[in-house]
Image (cartoon, rainbow, N blue to C red; front, top):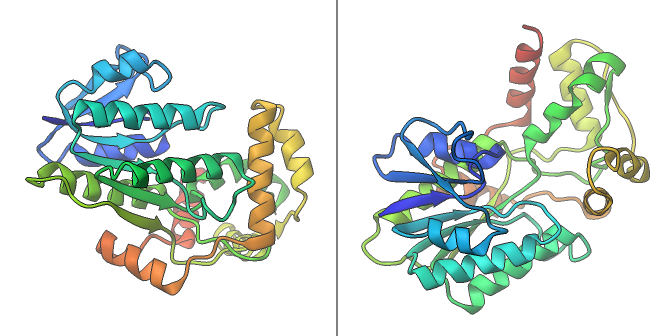
Length: 291
């Protein structure tokens, strides 16, 4: 039997695969292009796509545990629900689903609401799943390199309420722990949910100050203009996706996404260590940029 990882070439999926290779279990990576996929040594590339249900059903043959990461596409909800149905019908004994932090609260943000609906399906069908709810990925801010280093601005309008951003390596770590726990269990384990959050409550101003110290130059926060961000995003992604991102940023500004002490403590226990900090990420990024 084996673990199948969807989203295998993406930011989180690649972290999961890299860490699973040392586990001694058989690992497969779902990919549209097996011949071109650069998966870690020891991982079997399996052809398939969540948008092609028959190919995904074929990929589930012999799979005992599934890491389900549905792409942020227009039909993400349909793809995720069909994947869960296929996994249930295939007799998969364990599922780790990548959801999102504050999915239920941000009802007007399409990809948040969709992931919350998938969680409802998991509950309704009593599927043997671990639901991981990661906050905003710290590594998203690697895209800020040019504006940070040339204009001296942190330009992501996350607002002043605060977000408990999480390092993608910590998402990979907790996903692997959950996958191996379910894979090695003699019987399907009960449903569980883990909020995957960072140790800091970060605002635009706080992050600008961190970059000022790390880069040894003044960095200012660029402000809370989400309309402008949506217009810029539309030049590199579909309009529906740009609006989705703007609505998320609007909710960050109005409500924030700060983890409670209990949520952070529970994640720390599940992870077995303190989650990585934004400052540590910024220091690593600045060192990489200076090479």
